[in-house]
Length: 426
Image 1 (cartoon, rainbow, N blue to C red):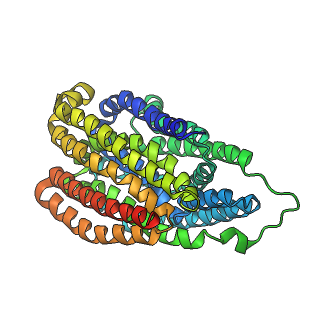
Image 2: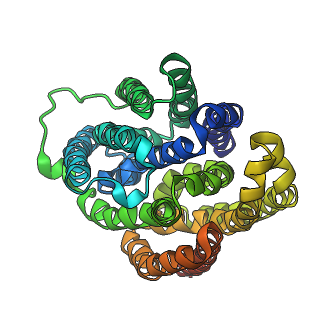
Image 3: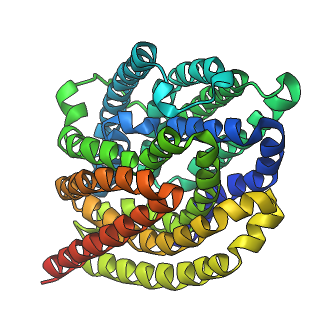
């Protein structure tokens, strides 16, 4: 499949849930209230980022399978894939135990939840912890499918999962009322079904060789080193993306989380556009860095120009009409609290978009240690700055600190991305 077709499938996989969310979120706001909706955004965040427990093996599988296909070592793909999935299941189970143990021992008082819904929120987060193994396994199977550049299957399944994240909460509210525990149970059922569909799709392309015998060394080859450094990046980078919601909840309450997270999550979904291109390029970079360096350079530069021009136009338009758009969508009262946040996020999304291609290039080149170090240093600076900003300036402070971080991150990643191109083409 061509880059254009794969990119189109990636756009469809991200756009479908986004459009459904536009319709469903006002309904959820009316029936859950701003407090429960804020908590639901936290639960969406938790479930969405449970893949931090995959030890970087999802991306490692994509990278390794792409390299094996380029080297015509197809017989090793089965061992590599199932070794990776076994590891991901194990760490997923450990992650679920750790999350649930922490909630049991320390509670959720630090989230500053309204007393009237404390028990409901406590049990909904406990139940959500069961989704970690489902998320890690799904991440691994998605990585294997992307290694075969089967983006059609990946994005059909992504559309189903993304749509269920909005439709099932609405259905649960309609059937059982505004109870977060029932909403989370519905979300977990959807994740289980999507996991089974991922396995079915993966089973069609990864076929067990005749007279096959599993070898741990063969299965782990190329995965452990790549995945080990990806683990650090996969933990730190998502933490920087989700920490703001929990810190806002602690200092300002769950209602403020809704005013911040709803525009943030909607605007963040615009990253589907550059991601549609860069996710397609990752297996190509992984393969062509070994065989066709000029092609890599051309794809990289073209993607940056296209992403920069397209995202600047889209985000500029949304920033100008932020208040009007939010008023029409969520109501004027909600817009008054959120439109300035949306403007800041729109600017940040442009920089975040321009950081995706160099990130993919660096990781495809096998330099995952570099991205891990970059994200770790950023986190050490970002975390205390975020806390201080929220303490003194609330949600506006959180948005501004996030903007500065993504601008710095974009600059650093592009610097090293161009260094790789220069080095490879010297």
